[in-house]
Image 1 (cartoon, rainbow over the protein chains, first blue to last red):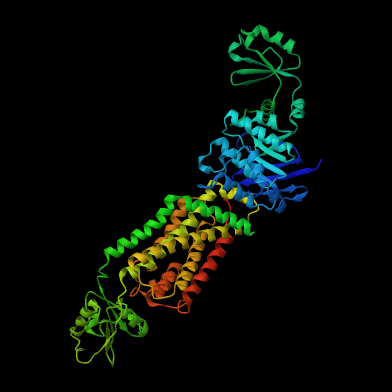
Image 2: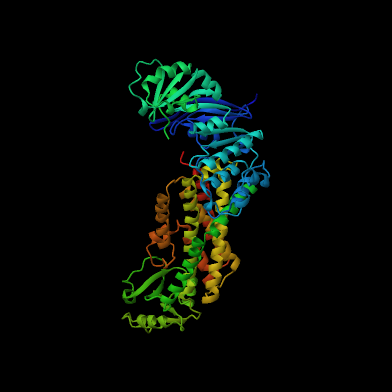
Length: 294
Length: 340
């Protein structure tokens, strides 16, 4: 499959801070690629370097095999995490203005329908809710029928319903054939939307692959969760990989029955025990050795 | 390229025109100032102003006892034609030439000229018998006539400097510039759109204020409207370009405000908005030529009050064009989309 985007050894150094430390990854055409990591991991800086709005200290970015330049600007659609829009300008005028900046132009009505902005076209940008604003920012990212779309933490601050609606939008866009590069610190979002992910921490890519591949590679089994408050004594005698997180003990096991038999004598209330598949959050915890910082 | 410039130009115009508070302020402040000041100073200036025809710019009080008279502001003129025009317009109360063939010129319709003449003839210099009197007639230039170009120029200055300087810094600070940078729009296209937008808006507002005050107060217009429009247009471009230089890299609105005020205040004081620099030290008058507003006001007053032609104000227009080119090129060169 064609490589849409490739970042090679990106380094960004600020005075006293190494924000990005040699990040390299490639994104295949037509997939949703997730760049994951906690706040401060360097993912926004990395993406902004790729987008061309921040200069790298060193490293190169290739778009369909060429150094990303004019063609990239015409064909990429970008949704920043925080973008102020002009005051006193309506949704319609904002979309039209950004549309006018490109040679490739999407059909206005299609964008409006896709992002469910039909009822908001004459509304002042200042009077949009958080979810409406995110849909407008996504619409702006779509005005040039982009082949590659950057979504930088697009659902931060949205309520659960607005997040789900936004996910539907992203899935529709991807179904249309566009390549998506999504940055997020929500692991559930990545699990739902992404075909491939790269996990970033302290400026470095520490893992890359499809979520299933990474989980299978890292975990051989299931996770048993039990509240610490239900333990009658400590579990030091039990030989299992265990994590403690927010009052919950997580036990990784390949044989649930055997593990439950061992744990049962130490637990006062077995009704609170949960058994589940490992997820990306577990993977992150395991790879970085620290919990997600939000 | 043009469609991108037009898109940004149009959006900026809409943003400004729909901001009712800012728009009203831009229109009401200069009109209120014009009416208020023309009413407050309707009795014209307090001091007597007498021109002294001589080569040197320095007035020597020892040359004649009259030149030591208190409460008279003596201004040296080496251009008789210019000085006589000022007598005609009541901008000078009296013009005097000492030497072998002493003369003085006075407008018989000027009340202050009448008293200045008495002061000259009774100054104890025994000129009464020897000095020749020349009469010059003409309609007085009121303070409102003189003030109108100053108010219009000051409003243009604030509108251009803050309209570009402050707005671009705000765009940079809130991330709007970063968003535009991620599009095919170039920095030059963005700058051209901003300059064009502010220039058009400033010209519309200036024309509106001028027509309003001109019609209501009946201010003087001896020259050609096209020439005046051209002066305002080139002046607006030069002031917008100056604002662009200030905003080219600054990321803090507070710093931008400080820098703009650092430019605004000396320019307002030294460019002749409120009072003429005639009689001011040579160094001050030379320094004032740095400011585009000085050239705008000199040229505009020459057209409005003295009927100057395009050729007459060509030096000012050339100076403004040069200032515009230098500031625009500098602004475009150092412009940055973001702090990085």
